[in-house]
Amino acid sequence: MRDIPGKPTVLLLDATRNSGGWESELTDRCFKAMRRRQVRLSGDGPWRPTRAEDLEGVLSAADDFNCLFLLAHGRGDGTPPSSDGRSYWGRLLLHPELSEKLLALCVFQPHDASLSQEVLQPGAWGRIALAPTAEITARDAIIFFVKFFYELDLHSRSSITSAMAQFAYFKAGRLVKNKVALRR
Image (cartoon, rainbow, N blue to C red):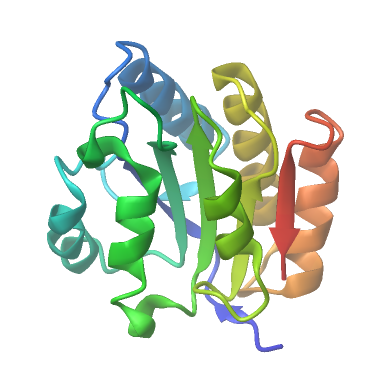
């Protein structure tokens, strides 16, 4: 497996549309926590597309990233299509030129097991991918993903290797047991 070139630079996409009233605060906290830990971030804050179709504009405006951290909701009775992780996944599949990046998908309330399975399937979009395997709380999400990107940044010199992603995953996984899986 080839490495992902460059030191980790994270594009944080908040596709939740703040539909529960707490998600914008969560993504702001994630962004600030990563910035405090000196993880390289794309932009001055989380990117917040209003719908999946807006993803192309965000991706072209933020061309300096090699890690995509997408927070969204799973399909449920009250989930609007504009905050549904599956809609954004469908748009990412239209961009094979970006599939050489690391994808960290955090879909919660409700957990979308079939979407996680698609993301984690060998050969799927993203050279390296993470996705929840069970319902993940806001607290779990911030603890796990901030720790993962911190460890990845700390130990990746000029590229992101599969082994380094595995190491960062192991370190973060000790904080949130059996709720997120890694495909490398």
